[in-house]
Image 1: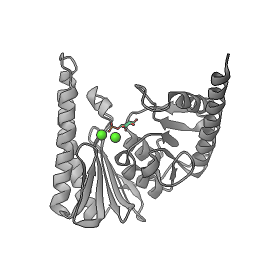
Image 2 (image 1 turned 90 degrees about the vertical axis):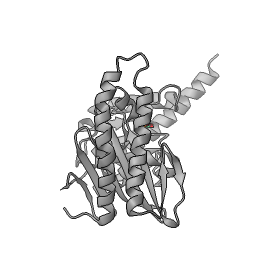
Image 3 (image 1 turned 45 degrees about the horizontal axis):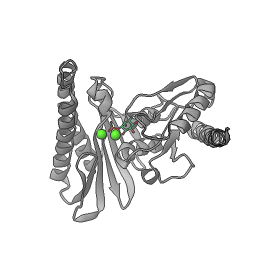
Image 4 (image 1 turned 45 degrees about the vertical axis):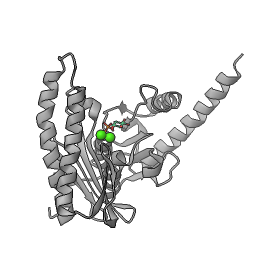
Length: 277
Ligand code: IPD
Ligand code: CA
Ligand code: CA
């Protein structure tokens, strides 16, 4: 499969950082038992991965801007182009030695995402997409699943934790999902949740309070695989809202409907609680 020069640069950068993370995963497993635990080691691995990606991309495109989760934003002299990078998505999985995490790199041109790579080094799966050119997994063209029955669907979601996010709303959303879908999954890496929708392993996915680096590459994968992506109100600018709903046409529409119903129910529940004697 012939990819463009810029996509090959992105794949090489992701694989370089990913190989080091895969090595580090082995070390993380040893650190599980240590008193201090692996947290500092993981933070260092996260930062090292971002630096590896940034340096690799800068070698090929020194003028492009850069937005990374760990190091923040760096302006480039070329104002039309910006990299959006999550060097280690699925940090909590990685911290526990769970081999489900990814390096995510997206290229933004004039405000639109035109190329994306999501690489899971633990199983060596490279998901790529370029705008108008389709989506691929290890050079095999991928499409979203064609299921059109909620009772057959396996859906992934985020789960607010530690007081982050709206737990009451999430409870209503998860309860609605449990009543309609064959299975609900919480995998812990938003970039891979979107990549798995793009290749049809998952029928749909939703999550709130995500950052542009969690979403940019994965959303392009879903769209280039024939899927639909929006925020929880059905609007398109997910990098701004931080909320995402993804799936094939039917699943996206149905999940949106269920989430909006759950939000209304959560609102009613809140009023009931507030007016309770
Ligand atoms: C997190 C993962 C997780 C999602 C969190 C993200 P990180 O990214 O994608 O699945 O629920 O909201 O912050 O911190 O592991 O890069
Ligand atoms: Ca992330
Ligand atoms: Ca991260």
